[in-house]
Length: 130
Image (cartoon, rainbow, N blue to C red; front, top):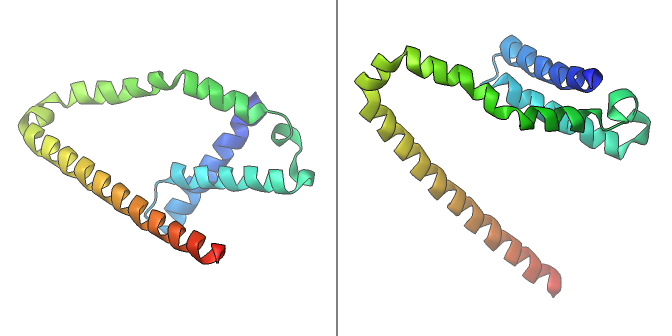
C-alpha cells in the first residue's frame, strides 16, 4: 500500500515540478495524472515494466482507499469558505453568474464536440463500408 501511494505521489510530484519549472499553464496534479495514465498504459503494453507496486494491484488499492475517503478532502474547502464568508457575501452574485455561464458554456461545448465526433464517425463508417 505504501509503495502504491509513493507511485501516485511521485507522478504528482513530477507533474508539479514540470509545471513550476516550465511554467506550463496546466495544474500539476493533472499532468501527474497523465503521467500515471502513461505509466499504467506502458505497464500493460510491456510486461517487463510490471514490477513492484506496478505488478500487484497496489495502486488500485490505494486509489480505492482515496476515493472512499474523498469527502474528507472537501473539509479544507469548506473551512476556507467559512473564513472568507464576507467575500462570498460581497461578490456572491458575480460568483453565481460566473458559475452559471461556465456551466452553460460547458454544456454547449460538450454537446457540440459530441455532434462533431458523431458526424466524423458516421463519415468514417460510411467510407469504410463501401
